[in-house]
Length: 294
Ligand code: SF4
Image (cartoon, rainbow, N blue to C red; front, top):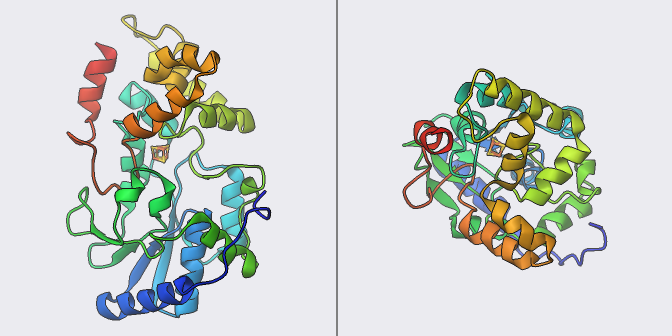
């Protein structure tokens, strides 16, 4: 599938990015690349290696990483520093009393946003404008609003997906096999920021993760008798379809674009390496709990 994509010829974008990385390194000193094992961070890392600058590269485990992704990183990127998770998604679900949602992404706060690099080091990511509507508003250099004093630098912010793949294929860079299975974004299994279709597909692909979520939902409900959810399966249904429940019927009737609009424009609040929180900011766990559980 990837190889059938029409790939562009190199413009100045590779040389331009390398030059920019060297300039940033000269001006700002040591840089720290947040590595996810996905195509964008693979290319960002390759650019850093070509630039020959001093940098460190870090990957944060989330406890819901696809095993194939972990194996890929361990095999091809042994130099990447792996930050182990302090807790797990499943423990957090039990503790918080509800699964993470788009507006209360407590897992992202724990696994992703907490892991910006130290304040005196620039945090580098492979974020691109073309990835989503939300990311189209992002800038190459930003001050992180979640963590004051942290500067974010996204060297391939203007790149297209085709440009990213061209660099990977031309340079024979290894990439996770999951792309060849048709996954376009690789990350946490069951992430609430994605569409219900993707969550379903991921749970079919990684059935043990689905079981682990169900286990957490069951533990979470223990001893509760006031609930909107009676069983772990109720929670799972809500987790996958959520507020989209009422639109599910329309989907079944074939009005798929309705869901797509809703998902992209209204519900796409979340974005790790958050720069602009949605209006009103992300909801606190207490506020979300009040709404969901009362
Ligand atoms: S990417 Fe999704 S699942 Fe992973 S930590 Fe963020 S919100 Fe949670």
